[in-house]
Amino acid sequence: MEFNTSPVIHDFSPFFKIHEDGSIQRFKKPEFAIPSYDPQTGVDSKDFVISPETGVSVRLFIPKSTDPDRKLPLLVYIHGGAFCLGSASSPTFHNFINLLVSEANVVVVSVDYRLAPEHPLPIAYDDSWSALQWVASHSAGNGPEPWLNNHADFQRAFLGGESAGANIANNVAIRAGVNPELINDVKFVGLLLIHPFFGGKEVDKMYKFMCPTSSGCDDDPRLNPVADPGLPSMRCSRVLFCLAEKDWLRNRGWAYYEALGKSGWGGEMEMMESEGEGHGFHLFNLTCEKAVTLMSRLASFLNQY
Image 1 (cartoon, one colour):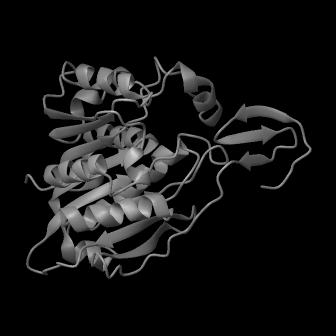
Image 2: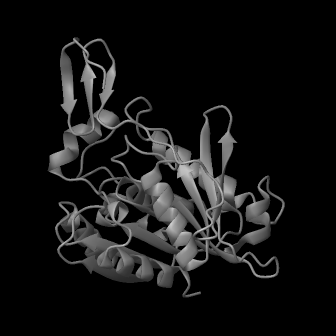
C-alpha cells in the first residue's frame, strides 16, 4: 500500500479512506482468478462484457454435465464486499461459485458491477439490473452467449448474493416484480439471501457517503426493503435466508424475514442460521463442516423445482 501524505478527510476502515486530494486508499488489493476449466470439479468459466460503454461484465459458470437435451437451473449471483470491494473475478467469490455450480449442477451468471465510492450508489444496483436484463435477452434461445442459450432453463431462474450482494439481489428482485415486462418471460422461482447487508446505524455514515441520495437505514428502501412499495410484487415465489449467529448483521436479517412474511408478498420463506459463525465465514473455509452444510442447503434450494 502506497503512503499518502495528504490528510484523511473520511476514514471508513477497514474498507477505504478518502484523502483531501481526492485519492482513495483501499485496504485490500484487487485479486484476479483466471476463468478456466477446473479439472477437480469439471466446472468451466468465462467472462463476457455486457456493456462496452461501462465495462460491466459477468462471469459465467457451467458444470461438466451439460446435456443439450436437459436445461439446468439458472442463478444470477451478485457478490458482496460492502459495495466497495471485490469482484466476480476475486478468488474468494470465484472459488465459492465454482463449488456451488459443481454441488448444485446449475448455471451461474456472476455479476461484476462497478464499485463505490468511485462509482456512487445506486450504480451497483443499476449495473446488476442491466445484467439481469442481459441474461433475460437469452430466454428465447437467441442471445449473444451460447452457454445461456444452450444450457440455462429460464423457467427455473434464481437471484442471489451474499452481504452487499444479497442486498442488491433483493432490490433487483423487487424491481423485476414491478417491471416484469423488462425481463421477458423469465420465471424467477427463488431468491438466496446469504448473510444479507440491510444496514444499521453502525454503517449508516459510510453508506450515505457511497450513496449520496440515501435517506439512511430506516427510510431507504434499499437498506430497509419493507419501506419499498414494490415489495409485495417481488419477482420470486420463495426466499431462503441464510444467517450466521455471530454476524453483526444478523438482527437486521431476522427483522426483514419477519417483516416479509407480513408484507403481502405471499411467497414461501425458509430460514437457516449457522450457529457460532460470523459474517461470510463460508467464503474463507469452503471445506469446514458448517460451510459444507450451508452449501448443501443452497444446492437443495436450487434443485427443488
